[in-house]
Length: 312
Ligand SMILES: CC(C)(COP(=O)(O)OP(=O)(O)OC[C@H]1O[C@@H](n2cnc3c(N)ncnc32)[C@H](O)[C@@H]1OP(=O)(O)O)[C@@H](O)C(=O)NCCC(=O)NCCS
Picture 1 (cartoon, protein in one colour):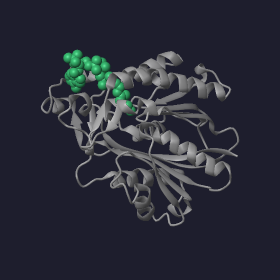
Picture 2: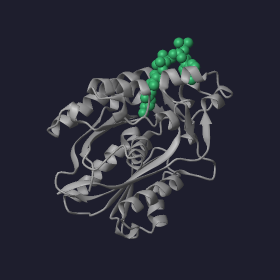
Picture 3: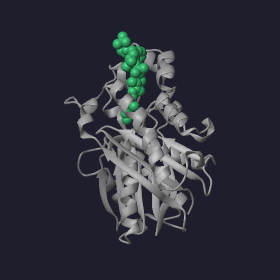
Picture 4: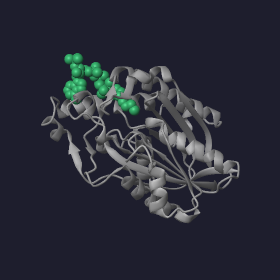
């Protein structure tokens, strides 16, 4: 059975935080942020919008696009490192709010690679015939764990959500291959401290990402029986434009074939890839039959890549 994405959706909070705003908060400049990261602005959810709210809006969008009703969802997988509460899970909150009464629900913790872990997990349940429809969401309210006095990190992150409804697709479409990986020995480079703040060794994460993203992308594309030049659209984790550019150049694909939502959203951790994917579909950048590669990396350290043929 071929398993793919039947519909995608996303939600970005309205409240915009620009680089000029950050200049008033910490010792930084628009020039430093744009040249070192590619980020021009990011969205920050207001106090009345928590992680589960953003997940709900993205999920509704994806269900509508997929033309699947909430009652037909068998499993909800929410990837997040910033849940409303450690328990109950965001997926359970969503199950109730969507009215997905028959769905099992659990949260997945693999940081910025979490959406990749979610989609691959969903694929296993559908391919084995256990479930028919799986709802996967990547959502983060990173502003809750950002140290707004630390210029090394506060300029990088933003809030948002992206979602996909998974199910059976026609032969030759859907997920062609995947790679998931982890290296716990790198956990010290990106973690949450006892004040609940995100702490990062940017240089170490940069070195890891610049190697891992293209390696994983090449691996999944070759495992699917294709070559780098066959890629129609690349959706890398939106962490730093320089990391993304290094991946793009190693794959030898043109600028217009890579998602760059980082400019307006910053790094949304597990929401980055599904937000960029949903936007690309809505903007017509991804069309039926296109060969897509999604690739992410994050705290753990974790990574994941998926090659898929777009369409139902
Ligand atoms: C964080 C990152 C943008 C820093 O860029 P960089 O070019 O490596 O910059 P460096 O770490 O070498 O720092 C250079 C200088 O800029 C300073 N700096 C850091 N943040 C700054 C800011 N917002 N504004 C101005 N200066 C800043 C540093 O203090 C350092 O100063 P020093 O040389 O006096 O010590 C980059 O390392 C990165 O993107 N890493 C990967 C992060 C990532 O992907 N995280 C998400 C994982 S999911």
